[in-house]
Image 1 (cartoon, helix red, strand yellow):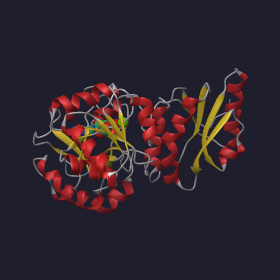
Image 2 (image 1 turned 90 degrees about the vertical axis):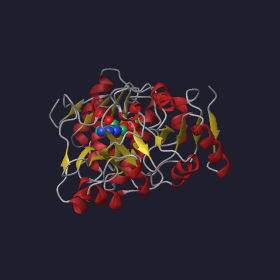
Image 3 (image 1 turned 135 degrees about the vertical axis):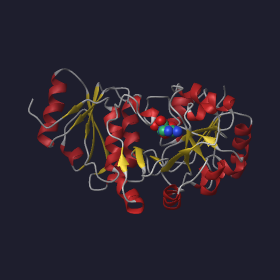
Image 4 (image 1 turned 120 degrees about the vertical axis):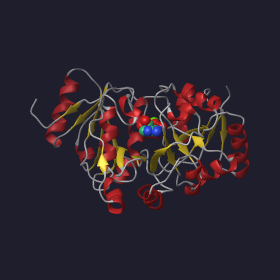
Length: 339
Ligand code: AMP
Ligand code: MG
């Protein structure tokens, strides 16, 4: 299949919207990461998303609408608590889970009786959804298991030839996916940390629960059990100071390995590795979030054998950063101990 590359002009959005109405799959920019959109009411269209990504069929998709007022068309009811969350966080990097009224295709919800809905806070993303006049099921626009794309170039690398189109809207802002919140019960439950922090949700909704282990046997959010965000070389998280970190670099190098490092300033400038990538300043975790997937993909074009990454405090967006890094490292985590 030829993958058409679109700019963000009105003319391009009209063409991309036509593809979507013809049950094709089109990648588009949002403020979190690039999404891979298809008509959420069409089984045929949605099945093409799963095929293009190689995504397991039991991992449901988030439905993207252009305005919060559209949510009611897809759910059985919106509680007062849910409405408060919608009013405060949508549009934005926030996904709400409510009881589905069955309008979207079964493949979107993976057979669950709930549906996940988001309103992206991105001019181009929303203009496309409005132009298509469809709810768009859209996971991140990467091959399943790889880091999510934060540029159109990343999407192209993974999906060229597998999808009908890519709209280039430049680099995304937040850089990590939305916060997924189950609002079907009495209190909101965070199923996946993301762009909106736990504290921000607590400030408007009072008590908030964060689902525990990512390795729960029956995760509430089905996507939790799969490998995610993995760069080509194995990733190891190093939880310690400069001396500790350098010792680990040296030890891998002594084994003859080429070592890549992902760290923030100032640490990144103090370490000596084969290749280092700075993901911003440690005192600005939103900058680290913006650059994280870029950093993970950066090493795919190098010949490093192993990537060592710094850890971050789990406060604010640090929750989401550590959630993604821990999964990317498939749980290789070296605590501060001597070697
Ligand atoms: P992605 O499409 O890669 O951004 O992942 C979407 C996330 O939302 C995955 O972790 C899904 O498991 C989760 N999700 C989507 N729909 C639901 C739902 N109805 N209930 C629980 N989790 C959901
Ligand atoms: Mg994803």
